[in-house]
Length: 413
Image 1 (tube, rainbow, N blue to C red):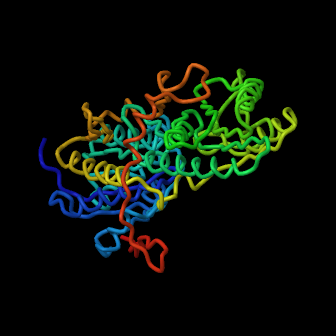
Image 2 (tube, rainbow, N blue to C red; image 1 turned 180 degrees about the vertical axis):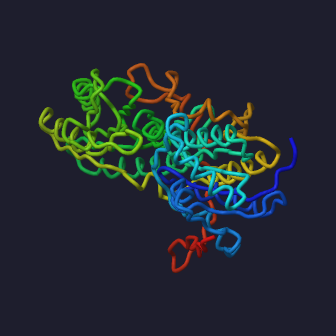
Image 3 (cartoon, rainbow, N blue to C red; image 1 turned 120 degrees about the vertical axis):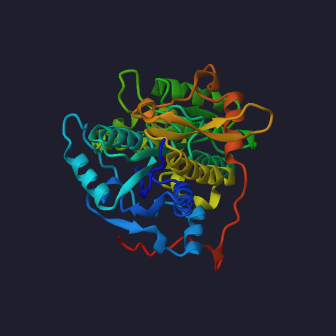
């Protein structure tokens, strides 16, 4: 394929992670150093920034400040949850994107996000091709949920898993200080895939973790939960439960809806707002078992706890951004930079390209062999899968013993 010279846009979308900015850094630094890319723009608040013609000139940033993005959580360029229409039904947004792309001579577009973001990438790639405008589009994966199809794991998951496992060890030890019967329930993110709740099993590997773990891959029953808790109480006085926020009953109703109307509220992609599950389950068990119960949500800390980030995750996130740019310059388009685990006794990860059309709107759930037969815990197969992803302690720049995060000037183009 012939050499393509022009500018690029890099955007972030969806929920942030502790390492999403490391992916953007990998893309920005690689693009700035590449002779085929004339200008590097960051999109303010994802695709909405492109539509609104609000772009940042990344060449105006202090290189040292950019480097701090490795340890900076959240989405430094700003994110969005904007659902772009199907171009075959409504091409209004796409015609606007094409206008902006032509204005800035954009020949490369990189979008850093999860399932819905890969759908956006695929639609943009398809429209640009049908319009005869050469623009290479590559998706950079991101999601703490670890549910993107076609990749061994996702940037952001390892750090979130490490935070959850660490928190579970700490909570488990705290829950056992009193010599009375009690149940502690930790609600963990995960609408349809239970990878995050499953990571609580890493705390068990460390010696102190949940007695029971429930994922949305399986039908959830209040009666089964109560029976499981009673069985644990036969052996010990304190029961620790980890549960995905998205667990549903046999009729497909979110258990969180039992005590809240939050699940009836939808975002732009039709996703229910989760929350309140642990409080609901704690109230039910307290009434059922007549013992002390406590419900807790880890909430946003799962995705922004950079103080507990995995060095492996940070480095792999950077690699995903870097390789996305190199792949586009080499002539690839309509792809996502996925991860491939190299076979062998030592953990090793490489990137591979998979078509966006095969990724968009598909979800990778926890496989059967990683769950125990009772569907209330994890197997060694999961530990072997997840443990390498949480390894390594990054060196972090501190000021007055507090983290020093990147502070970009965000000079508009």
